[in-house]
Amino acid sequence: MKFGVIILQVLLIHLFLFLGAAAKAIIPLPIPASMFGLAILFLAICLKMVKLEWVEKGANWLMAELLLFFIPSAVGIVNYDEILSFQGAEIVFLIGISTILVMGMTAWIAEKIIGKKRGGRHDDGNRNRRNVLDVSVGKTNWR
Amino acid sequence: MVTVTVVTYLMYRLAKRIGGKWNYPLFHPLLLAPILLIGFISVLHITADEYLDASKWLTHMLGPATVAFAVPIYKNLPVVKKYMSTIIISITSGTLVAIFSTFALSKLFHLNVEFITSIMPRSITTPIAIEVSKEIGGLPALTTVFVIITGVIGGVVGPSVIKWLSIQTPIAKGLALGMGAHGCGTNKALEYGEKEATFSSLGMIFAAWITLLWGALLIPALINIH
Image (cartoon, rainbow over all chains, first blue to last red):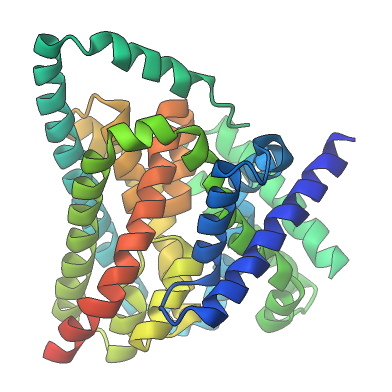
């Protein structure tokens, strides 16, 4: 039963991917169909054309099992001899260094901005509002 | 096709279970499951291309999986609005660091042009990275490989970076993981908590959008410099 619901909802989400592909055919921008699909689904939920419950379980399943969909491409690595050679070690090193820089920079800047916002918040008495928001985040069900 | 799917799913479950039991970088499901599967197909004399063709629909699911991220954005709309500037500033910086550091290091290591164009969009989620790669003249299959390597490495080094910089806020942790390691980072962020996971998926989506923009404006100019 639960599995059937997930399948139906994934099919519904699929429909929005097709709508995204249609939008891509009409709008001449270098934006992928899945991004158009995301935007259309988002608008449809906002405009109450699609109820959150209709897609929520399917969406949660797709996001929770995301790694599964990467696995075939990862197996495809065997098609690239270079990756398994010395150059492969270089590339892994390159990606490692770059990823550390990217994550460090993103986290550092985000933390700085939040620190400033928090600093100002003590004075304008917005703390309560923040707590309300924290609760709303805590309610989201991911699995 | 059914056999390939079932075996892939079982190997994925097994790898996830092993990875959950021994929390050791080399037991990452995205490393372990493909190794098990490569072993499996070579024993049965299935070529990689035959395997890829049969499991194509699993890769195709990355499309609806990207669409699905509309749900967490909608559910967290008040938080998204509230932290919009934080998200945009930190993720724009993240994408710039990703593009410039990847480009500089590829030049340093004398990668050929094909590799450089394919590696540039490596920090974002596969379906979008493929689009950017096509746009700038890279090879989508090769880009996929670089995206995967980024995901695995990001999932491993992410927690260390957070620890080294003693990052405290769930927002910064989440954004960094989503920016640096797309879906794999978001998967890692789930281990921290829901707020981290929310911001990780937001980071991932914004990284994809902003990189699309750079794919049209910045990356072609960079590649032409030589």
